[in-house]
Length: 137
Image (cartoon, rainbow, N blue to C red):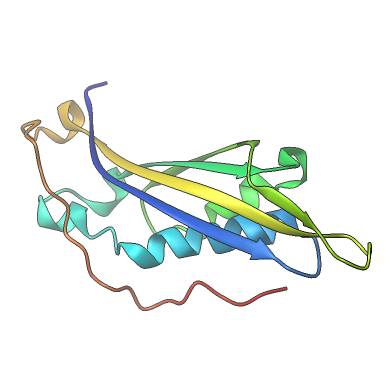
C-alpha cells in the first residue's frame, strides 16, 4: 500500500474524578479532532470513507481502555486504535485515587494507489469543527 500521510494531530484528555481511562482517551481524541476538522478528503477529491485514521493513545494502564468503544467517535474513515503505556496518572492529594491523563496522536493517510491520486506533497486544510472536546468526569 502506498500510503501518503496528510495530517498529524495531537490531543490530550482527562478523567479527573472517575479514573475512566476510556473516557480520558475519548476526550483526547475529540481534542485532537477539535484542532483539525479533517476535511482534507474533500480538498483532494477523495471520498471520506477512504481516510485511513491511525490513532495512538498513551495511558498508564492501557488494558483499561476499551478501544472498540472509541471507534464510534469517528464519523467516517477507517479508524484503527492502538493503546500504549504513556500518559500520566496524577495522585490526588488526599490519597483517594488518581486523575488520568491520556495523550493522543491521530494520523490521517490515504492509500494513493487505491484512490488513483498522485502522491504529491499535499498540504492539509483546517477549520473549526462543530464539536467541543467535552468536560471532566
